[in-house]
Image (cartoon, rainbow, N blue to C red):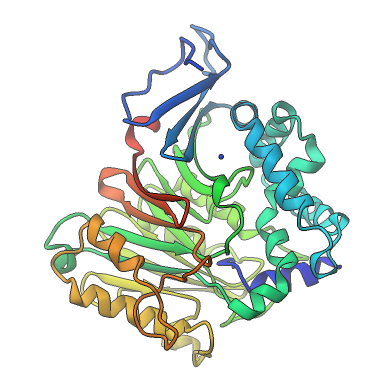
Length: 415
């Protein structure tokens, strides 16, 4: 199967479319999470490049806190999640081989192409992970692109069920002046739930510490927040722009990792979108402590869409800005309906959009007739996030696997 076929299959489903702590290093304040282990077991006491990563558990969800150079962070990642990474590879990459006429060589070819265009520092994470996990570089490259592989291998199922993502931000009048709160549903389907992983990167090159929620082995950003309280989440936008530039442009989620590492404000984040064109069309919601916008990011440029009202913004999988001149094509996936549902639920809860309320709102199921909410049950919403940038806090839920858990990120942003 050629690379283009893998990407087109992806577009049908994704939003893009799982011991004791050694001494030394920078101390982590009590997070309330379960400490599992650190790597190396004992970090050097005096070094200019701190090198110790730590694995915590938030319920059943892995929280991996890394620090050092990018290669050091990759080595920490691979050692701390060695079992999960190998199980993930065997279960998802090899286990899906043959579906939709897929072969392992297909994903390896695509993974190699993606790796070739990766920023060097993120290559170093993959290289370090490959070494200490025992996967080796070829398997680590493939695991990094697992979401594309899953989407392509499940192409027929994807076409029948049409999973898509959604996001809702509320602030100002909707929170009664309280902190902005963002809710996000990530709809990849029913695979990989046990490998949802929050990874906190603390690089020593001056980049901002960043927390990314993906699957084990994925070195990019589809949902994340940095130490400055800048949050973003990515939805598939190919319904509004089906152009495919994968042969000539790097994969956009790697760009998003870099955007988060450099942005101290929503305005700065916007400057990176305006100067970068993606490989496929995406709809990326960005937020900081005070407001939120939607970056309708086509292969030919970006339009920054402001709030839907005074203190509310909702997005699903189509461009809303009228300047595009693109009428929404609604259908079985209820793109328009899911967005309208979220706005209606926000209006019903106006003045009381706390994190707890947001959890209920984004978990409201989409009914067969398109009414209700945006949650895709059963088995379509892979995970949910509620984020509060002002307090550097995330709440994460993996349906049918882990109920909501609170993760205070501030203690893990070490630099």
